[in-house]
Image 1 (cartoon, rainbow, N blue to C red):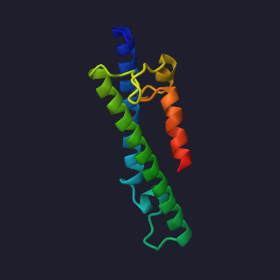
Image 2 (image 1 turned 90 degrees about the vertical axis):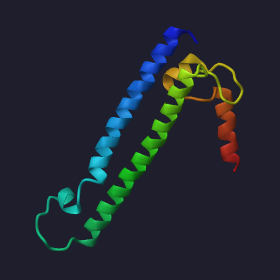
Image 3 (image 1 turned 60 degrees about the vertical axis):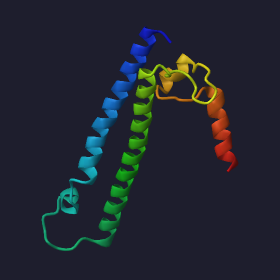
Length: 127
């Protein structure tokens, strides 16, 4: 991989990283900074209906799921940036072959070539 390609993929990874961090801020605000009263806009001191509480709990759980998924993606992007800096980016961590540039454009944090990724997926299905 030449310097121009490296710079292009670094820019792409950093942009995706910035977007994820921004998304984390929005998820944090939605999940942790709001109370039930804030979410419903209800200013009364009466208790809430059980269905409302269930819906709020489900929405909060969904937000935590998205935050967890984004956190895993952020980890993979940081690992890709680490590989970029130590000159191992673009090489499959399993077989050592070059990862196709089209794959890296689609999934810039890819650590496996298509062949090894397919083998990994087959192993997961076999469990």
